[in-house]
Length: 310
Image: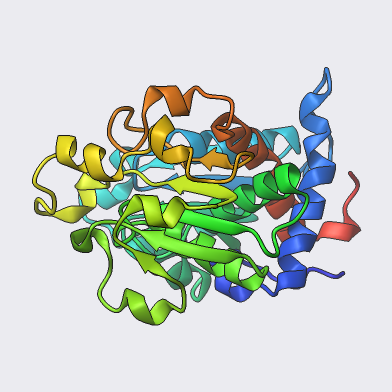
């Protein structure tokens, strides 16, 4: 397959075949991460700038590690060190970066659509590392990669996504990717954390975690994003943990071989108990490991893919 996308802005741009092609490419890169010398010359001479206007540990570091393992020249910009704090517009910042001739900008921004805005105005490739509550495509791809490794397939899997659906770009990207690949998705959360019109999303919506988890193959827990809520939408975190937190008892309702996922960072004792987070069914650190391989694949593919040396 020839990869024809200049930008990675959201899962909605991909077909099922393209999603599996990205995952297959990531599988080939995962082997590099287990070598004694974890570096290949694939993107030597390419310049990649990570522009993160929101806090990030896993995604930012993962993209940086991915770029450096492909031998790209990599630079990082955060909100606190950017000219935006001095009043510069996002477009002017982008145009100044463009004048430095980067090949790829990896961007996280608190405004939905910000990466799309840049992609429409600049010549470099843009990879969306999370835009507001809209999408987080690379997270969904690494999640699907992890599911496929454990289950051998995505089609037909029963996947329960539980928690703060309203503010979760991870939930939206996963929903799109899983639907495209033929999985059965279930959403669950308290009414105050479910978006208006969620019933029109074409998937079952539950208000009891026990109903959503029943016979699930994959249980994906989401963090409560209090920084996006602007107001208190829950009586207390303690009450949320009681009704929507995943513990061993609730997990027993899922299939015996079910896996537990979380995009991080985890709030132990809130959306997930330590006994589950550290238990045999959790694949959370595997998600992190697969994140490097997926992001290597995305950087490789938008840079020319099959025309490059691996």
